[in-house]
Length: 451
Image 1 (cartoon, rainbow, N blue to C red):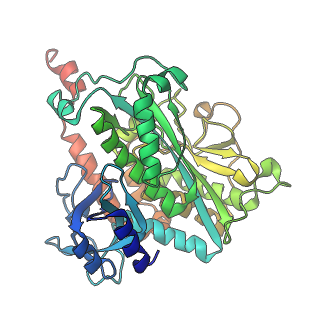
Image 2 (image 1 turned 90 degrees about the vertical axis):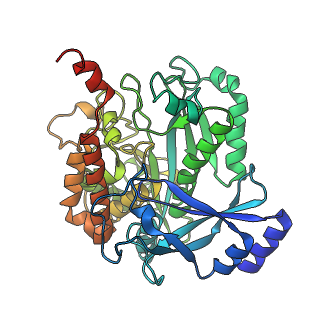
Image 3 (image 1 turned 135 degrees about the vertical axis):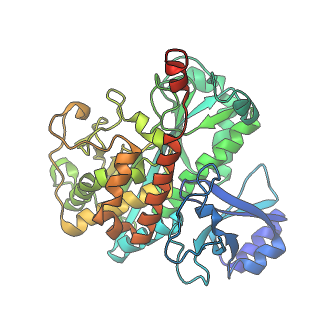
């Protein structure tokens, strides 16, 4: 809607305040409240937002040596440009409009190299220039606990208490027992313009999954990123806590964050992955897209699995992929092909719920386009358990290994940009350094008395 229409909506809905924010490299939504007067003064030209948000790690500690081209020391203001198409109103704050912003370097001519949403926009623009419209949908698993944020820190995360016991996957009973929470999630997300296609319990105590409706790539990423943030607000109102960690407990399954992807023509009417005359109804475009993703997955893993904890999920027997494999309706592969007419798609099963949706989706699309542009054939499909196949090149099994592969990847720099890759690599090196200096509960239990 244009600004005159937006002013009318503000008046009709009694909007008195505005909340504006943007996502950092780790997927944290950084924002602030502003007055409506301030909003109307900056909505077209943008406003200053300290670019320290790209200098902080996930715990608000300053990275070491994060200076990149165009980013000056001293953390000046970046220019935040409000995307009015992201207008939402959270039901709990009915007089407050919410918007997402994209970050630019001072002067506003060049996107900030570390801005994840602008990264995805650039990748999508490349696809659209070739007449291709990427559409994606995210599935996110999360664990719910009988804890408030205050009690979590008081207990120092010892003996977390899930909201329900047992391995109740797809449980009608559990969904009924927690119907107040479930309906709050469904209704609030719908009112906040986040389209949930399905929600159910997964296998494990207190674990749930949502499937978000597929959409154009940027909107799909907005919905996935905002779902995670909004979910934390909803459960807090119920005295609960939620985590999207890839693996919160060594004895339980991890939390997946699978991404479903397809390419449509420029009209958005024809799914270019579907060819009824081809084997498995998978078009040549889809096979080359798949070929690019399989070929580049090892060197792009740090973008799909961004944290130390992400790699605790990569163990045999839990449907987490160990090789850059693919198969038709095979959930043990990194890439699952789902032949379904105009719903034909490729599911990236390497990703977990801890993804930054903008970065992960940009990486999926960019690697797929790389394959299409080079007509890269995929490897042979896997039938049976892909985690037990021999001779296949493994995916990185640690953040250190994955970061080294990304740093050395010429393809990553080509498809995502030199400046973004350099910055991202530095942030992962910092994460690795912080982990190396940590003393864990495992170390205390194993060594405290024995040595």
